[in-house]
Length: 385
Ligand SMILES: Cc1cc2nc3c(=O)[nH]c(=O)nc-3n(C[C@H](O)[C@H](O)[C@H](O)COP(=O)(O)OP(=O)(O)OC[C@H]3O[C@@H](n4cnc5c(N)ncnc54)[C@H](O)[C@@H]3O)c2cc1C
Image (cartoon, rainbow, N blue to C red; front, side):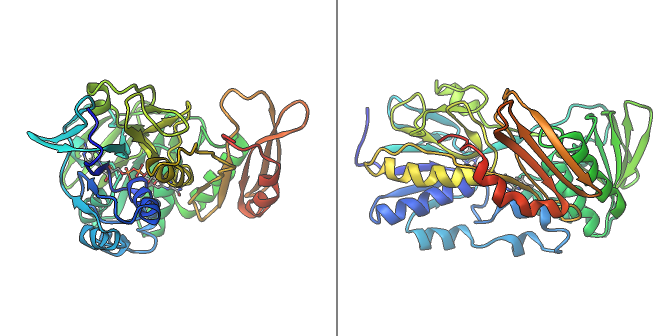
């Protein structure tokens, strides 16, 4: 039963939730809005979490506003440290424990969760994921005064943390089961250029093996790798991947696939329930980046205020924050037919992915070549026109 006088309820105060509400406020100054978040509701830019050690910024310094500041600025109610535990779409209610909260429109902006590594040993409690500002604060407290960090994973987040933590004065070793770093983003030559840059800063890579066991060793840990190597560290950062949060949606009967399934209006399978950001799969695409969620926030604000508006994704290159060797990449759509054409001069790589007709479908640029992104962007097809 829909209840059109009930508030809009937005679950999540990440960039998706806050950007949506900012857009909503431009169009509907009076609309009653409740935001609910499991964390402290501070407004911060999550991409900055992997630049904080190099800049020596505490969690407080990365925060741009408290939940109270945001509530006042946006004229909304924000419930912090509050987890939604159930959704009843038939009756248009979400539950926090036993407490029901009615909605007229519900927006799921609850993000993605870090995949936890499975391994043996008694040191698992020294393995940390850094997926929000509170995680970052706890990790900084753990490594305060320490010097050796082991990073699990050599994807975007693992490589960014490796570069950042070495800039912050740590000795960093990276373990990942892939043949080259940034395996889903870069062709081999470009990955080598970035790896060599990181090695030049002192980062040590173990590519190929998995971490199989982590044992405590005094204040720190020793990690056993599947190739027999042992790596000692004060703490471990796990950056082996993120996956959209789905559990609550599944229990509520909302259709999911890799993410919460949404059409281009960002509507889920259930009436009056919408989704955007890291938890959403929009017409088959799960994109764990800021630009798609910004486009989604703009479109969804219009839809929720009475002007149904489909989201489009233009060209959305991804910058990998490895300042030692800058990287910009625009991956081709999965399963596109084509081949890489690659030029490399030291750390500077220009890799273009073209089809048989010669059309540019994707690219990867490193070092000084990143400045060619503007020209290449003009040639690329939109991700979802
Ligand atoms: C280290 C790092 C670096 C990154 N760098 C870049 C970059 O350079 N460029 C880029 O484009 N992208 C980058 N990303 C990705 C980008 O940060 C994310 O795509 C974006 O922040 C996702 O925002 P979100 O609002 O969807 O999710 P989140 O920020 O994860 O927010 C989820 C919100 O939902 C809340 N929540 C979850 N479950 C519940 C529940 N049951 N009840 C109530 N609340 C709940 C959480 O408390 C939180 O408030 C990076 C990510 C990381 C981790």
